Length: 81
Image (cartoon, rainbow, N blue to C red; front, side):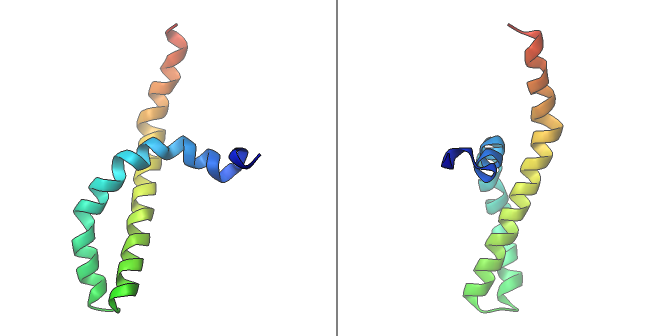
């Protein structure tokens, strides 16, 4: 029952995209965000805010990728045995 919850189904659907995109987004954006946020907030809040923003950016990129790239290819499965 626990494994059939809506949140876990969503996470399962988008897990590959999250896996693929999390490190590039982190690697490209982290330093700039921490520098920007660090100028305004204390280090703990700056790191927390940067992490949340990077998570949101990663999830947005994952949704974009899933619906515009993966889903059209998944629909092609019906043409192959």
